[in-house]
Length: 69
Image 1 (cartoon, rainbow, N blue to C red):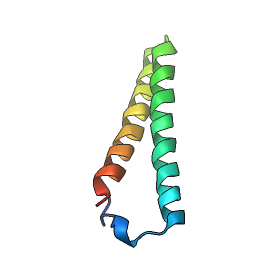
Image 2: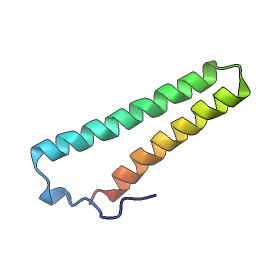
Image 3: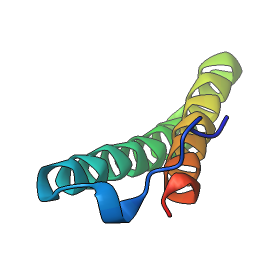
Image 4: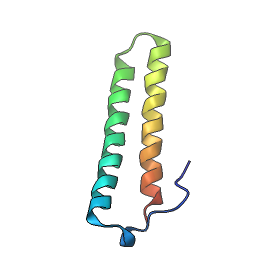
């Protein structure tokens, strides 16, 4: 799901830009950690839960980046 309104980079201030970087970075970090956790799990259900969480976090990152213009 993409953002409803694209983010016009020319209309944001430094604080908003810093917040976007933090949100995107946090979700990238979550994706990496969840992927790592999924690779450590033996239980197939928990492994799948972490894998799906990793994919969801990466989708959020992709959607944010694609919404920047």
